Length: 322
Image 1 (cartoon, helix red, strand yellow):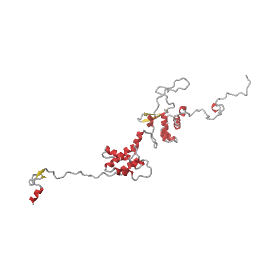
Image 2 (cartoon, rainbow, N blue to C red):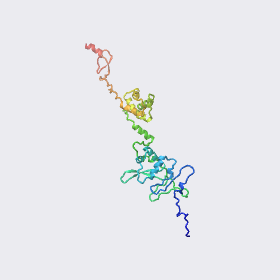
Image 3 (cartoon, helix red, strand yellow):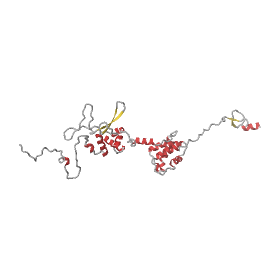
Image 4 (cartoon, rainbow, N blue to C red):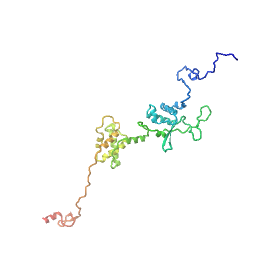
């Protein structure tokens, strides 16, 4: 019992030793080799369903991992993320919409004690899990192979529902519906003159004139929205007794040789800047000042003539007066 064995190790070797760590084993083939060290502080657990998501872009995956690593109360709006990373506001907004579409982000509006309405950003590290209610512990997702029934998934989160909650950034183009984009485009065009009497026939003639401008210059091919915006201006010209040929010449003459980026804006400017004056005032023909007397028979020649009283006609009175 008191015999010593100098060749025996003084204590059991730890499995975490560098030479015995299973992740440090040498591989004969190519591929990835992990060299992992256990974290004891400043770390976060992120599921592979996010980091290896088959549909999310690399930008969205990176944003999701960054947001899940932030502390509670950190700002994750587009302006703050654009100041933190080199990507622009448009790409950051697209990545956030991807995360919202797949349930990793959720936006909720709440009214604070001061009465203001603020937007809360909720980061979901496990999309589809039940939201915890008051007095109940959060439900845990089932791990495969343990015989536990999985937690039923909630309804998918729509990106359009929370798209307006993202704060717009100066210089970034907002994502809008086609109808809203057309309305914004129409509002951005210069104002055109309006006719005093917008008759349907006059507006139709103006729209036909605008639709035929591309025959004189292919660059003046207008859309339906642009034609509807410019038609009242052309009608105002036609209302001022300007012929369609003169209106067409005013819109198509002396165009620049450079490509026209916005032909509708150029036409709107010409319609407003070169608007001719109203036609001269024409007084209506007033009735004759002479009274229209009834017909009477002349006492001398029995011819009919107009006179306020019976008597002789002009021819019969002249010799008598002479």
